[in-house]
Amino acid sequence: MTAETNEASDLTGQLAELRERIGVLEDELAVRRVIAAYGPAVDSGDSAATGALWTREAVYDMDVGVLDGRDEITAMVDGPVHQEIIGGGSAHAIGPAAVDLHGDEATAITYSQLFRGDGKGGFWIWRVAANRWELARTPEGWQVVRRTTRLLDGRPDARELLRRTAGR
Amino acid sequence: MTAETNEASDLTGQLAELRERIGVLEDELAVRRVIAAYGPAVDSGDSAATGALWTREAVYDMDVGVLDGRDEITAMVDGPVHQEIIGGGSAHAIGPAAVDLHGDEATAITYSQLFRGDGKGGFWIWRVAANRWELARTPEGWQVVRRTTRLLDGRPDARELLRRTAGR
Amino acid sequence: MTAETNEASDLTGQLAELRERIGVLEDELAVRRVIAAYGPAVDSGDSAATGALWTREAVYDMDVGVLDGRDEITAMVDGPVHQEIIGGGSAHAIGPAAVDLHGDEATAITYSQLFRGDGKGGFWIWRVAANRWELARTPEGWQVVRRTTRLLDGRPDARELLRRTAGR
Image (cartoon, rainbow over all chains, first blue to last red; front, side, top):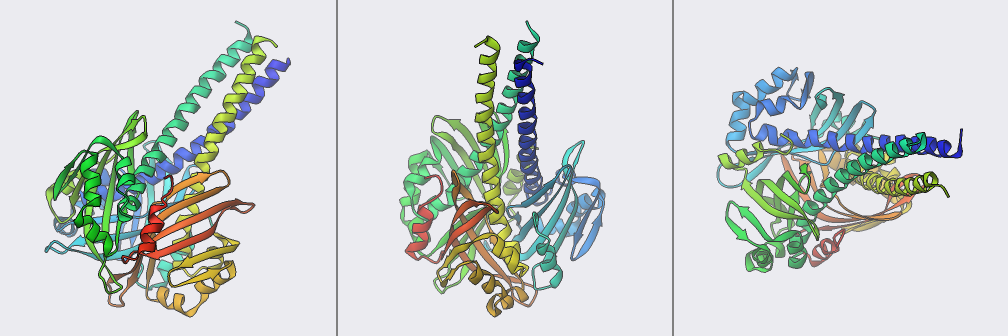
């Protein structure tokens, strides 16, 4: 090998390293983008856009029940309870995600607040919850595989969910 | 061409690709930085800092009126209504942005909550809104060209605004 | 020098530039990750995880008092006041950070809302505050050196804190 090809080989190795680091940054922002898209999708009543954020077999495990599969999630958006909520004005505000990437999978912890219009020009807080998101890289990009949500009303399981924070 | 220059040419192409991907990541964080700077600017009453976030011809389209141009935006911050709001304590809390970059332009969707002090040590929610931001790369960096804000009180136009979510 | 080594030398310089830009992006996300981990740590009552976010000599300067050093911060989490707060349900919701990096140090501005359960299935807002975070790169990663928090109830010092916004 000549000095020049040694140099080129080293540059190739460095490029591969930088490429991997860029990929990790892109993945973290992509994961955040999926989570940031959830609120606008459900508050606008766009069940197809909501469904596209989840894998077909995804599970949305809430304290008030479990939605099993994308079809049950889109049906929730189209259903009468959700339609009544958004009819009066709602904001599924989801905070900055603490993301923990591991290859083709990721977990994220977020708070969520559900603000609702009171019909008299004001707003009130209906739900404040802890959320753990499990995501996977799929042929359609990053999608949610499982979301677990627990009301932060003092119940131990919400604190337990937060304890398993990303990166710890 | 020698094998070495072929190699170098390929490395140059790879560097260009990585450079572009890094630029996209930097742009997304820059866009988020502009949006994150809005609240602190208006809640501290810093009209110059607020104005610097917008282009000179920017439009701030709120449900309660339209501000046309940077000068009207800075005048709003200096005006008596805004001064009274911040005098009693206010937080223009703006959530994580769902950013959609396309070259020298970007759109972003956010929720916003306007929390206000009640003068008795407590706080209340005055406004909960959907926001669509349109930004552009300018000689001064990324700036807001148009922000459209609609109260999430059940009105259809707020839901319509959220439906046009970034990336969809 | 041959043309090939000139080329390689240029590529090495470009790699160094890209490496630095990637490092800045990684740092910004790392800083955000530290801030995003604070809420889950304190709301789950995990004093060790809370302490790990701060340097040993860190200062948490609140309007209601000053915690001097990591040990006082972890003691606060384990103390009766905090335990009572989380026992009834609490969300230390901290918004998107406006981060200003400068080498091995960083500052960030955030809003924070402290939502609490009312014991009857509802929630209320206890505190809405402005926060300035000072962080440093340490052998354990990015850690908080000082956090200053001021209630946004109209007091001038909260507005002053927001005025010193990241990046301005």
